[in-house]
Length: 322
Ligand code: SF4
Image 1 (cartoon, rainbow, N blue to C red):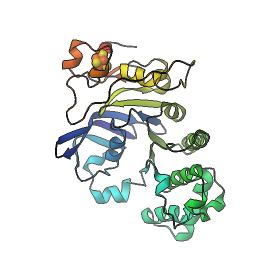
Image 2: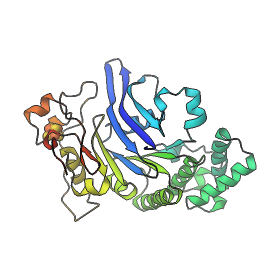
Image 3: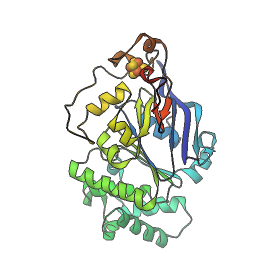
Image 4: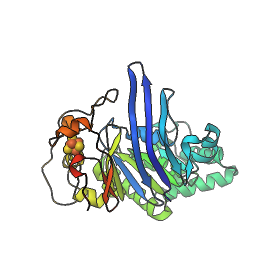
């Protein structure tokens, strides 16, 4: 059984202009000790998926279908009190985008990690501080940094501190939303090393959300590509980077410098992602797709397995088996 099994998940935002179908029939799994990268352009629904998994949604958002099973238990059916007591922090924690800038400026790093532990577990202050110090060491910082305030740390150190905070209650799954955005490339590489090391040493599962394919190639063993609220390709990182099948994945990969294989010329994806208030019929990528056929404008391609645990939603590949 997968640790996290998201099936046919639909989450819509209600607006004055109608329903925004931000997460529209999304299915994927994260196995124990596995790291899945969720990639796609800004606004494709990646962060909405993460917030839905943790049920941290704004008032105008509603889960209208599907399930989110954590070790077999459906998070969608849980009460808020159960989510607070048993799920958030303890089973699933999240490193929010820009979290390092949200550290409380008047509390030390140690105090902030300690507070997270004390809020969710019945332990004494001394034990919580001891654990906070160990976590700080675990993410590659000097133990003495527990006494530092956020303004005394560099961007990379702050990112390590929020990573330590996410690990405070020994979660099974950590969701990291754009964990290296706003860091320079050298610090990004250091943070990536910390993430890889933690996954190997602690055996935690990770869901890494990013538009940066190099980051996903570095940290994840599987990747799911999202477009306009849907997963359009899903499989092992090595397979997908070597031979992307969906035309959007192909474009996305050639829009970034190569991370596997020789250097290639970069290209751009013409046009814009659709308005999810009124997405195009059929394949949502068809207005931007160079291979669009008549059927693409009328019928939505289902996400089908083509072998080797690889899934693709494109009429070009229907009936294909690897
Ligand atoms: Fe392009 Fe059609 Fe495949 Fe969509 S289904 S990606 S429009 S070929």
